[in-house]
Each structure stands twice: as structure tokens, then as C-alpha cells.
Length: 288
Image 1 (cartoon, rainbow, N blue to C red):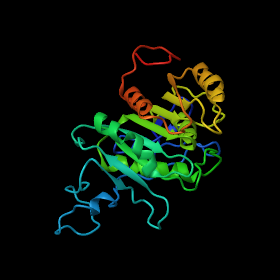
Image 2 (cartoon, rainbow, N blue to C red):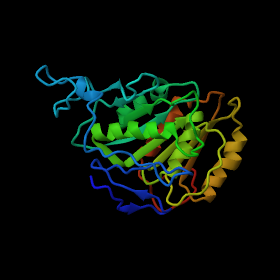
Image 3 (cartoon, helix red, strand yellow):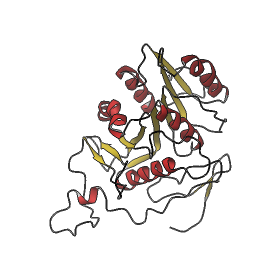
């Protein structure tokens, strides 16, 4: 791939197309853009080593290689030195002939990729969505974006792997997170609207977010009595500010103290993600 930029976002951010349709992304406050490597050489791990026939050279990519069985979660296997990694879930109805939506799920503080995937797996089967759940580099996600950001870089790497291995619709990319992961999803998703079409934040924390042009659609949910998460800050400060910025936003409250949303809220959020936007409205509480 030629080392040149050919696309500029509405806020001046420069993007470079990849051979799989995905754009380079992640704009930091200290650096205009963190560029990722070309995908001209696809990684051999994790999937190429799973089901290659005995005649294939171990560790060598081959066109016949696929996950052992769709409908299961597999390790991302991106951390050769051990430590936090992540999971990818491929719906059983996946076919390369039909690009599927992708949802990136960020776990809670002290959580992990398995926890992040669990609420979405049934909906992923129903709506044929590829799930990617990277692990945070530390206990908490780094939402500061001041200079180099290891979490953002690893999310980038995880998505790069998914886009290079599977047939993904680059126009249907959702970044989701619960609690601390929801805060990270907001911070990262709004900065990268050219990549993420949708952002889901379940019980997010407070964060100072500027208005970005042409931002993603946003779904926010919050429990009525979640410890250490004041619902009034979310419903009376964060949500109104985002609507004033012009974002297409749906806000849902549910009874309870759990940070993770109940199944009906998850189902509502995923259906919202897969629903086509109707009209040119701004700031409505639901989609037509």
C-alpha cells in the first residue's frame, strides 16, 4: 500500500483506506493521528493455525483456514507475551459472501472480554453480528487520550485482525461498553466517527466530551440506583449536552442497581444498532 493519505474528515483528521475497507483511525489530543500498519500481509494467528489441513505448513496462512466452528468465541491471540488479550465471537450464520456488522464490546472495570461478550451473544446470533471484545491493558480503560494510549492501540489491533480475517461491513461498526468501558466507548467512539457508525454506553461515567461534526448515533442506558453512578448526571447533563451537539441519541433508563444492562435493554440496543435511520431528525428519544 502506498504511504499516502487520500481522505480528510470533516474535522481535519486524515484517514488512509485499507484493503479491507476499514479506515485508519484513533485521533489523540497530542497527536493528529496514530497510523496502523498496512494489512497487505495478514497475520497467521489466531485462526490460520486452527484448522489448516496436515499438509499445510504450520503457522502459514491458507485460504481454507476458518475457525473450528462458527457460533463460538475464540481468543484474539494478539498478546504473544501473555497477559490481557481478548475474544472474538463469530455468529453461526456467518458467510464470507455477505459482510456482517461488527460490535466491539468493552468490559467493566475489573472485568474481562468474556464478561463483555456475554450480554450480546444471543443478539449476535439473531442479528448476525461479529463480536470483538479486547481486554484493557490495565484494570481501568485509559480514557485520557493524552499522547500514546495503549488501550486505543490494542482496540485498533483487535479490529484490524477482525477486518482482515472476516467479511465485515465497514459502514456498520458499533463501539459498546459497560460502566468504565462505556466511558471509554464514548471517549473513543465520538473521536472516530468516520470509523464507528454507532456507540453504545451502558451506565457510563462522567467525561468532558466536545462536540464533533457528523458524529455516530448514540445509545445510552442507565440504572436508576447504580452505586457510584449518579443517574441525574447522565440524564440531566450528559444526554442533554449530546443532544445539543446534534447527535442522534436514544436514552433508556431501567430499574435497578446493576451496571450491566438487563437483557431487554441489550436487545433494544442491538435492534437500534441494526435499524436504519429514518428522516433527518436530531435529538429524538427513539428511532422510527
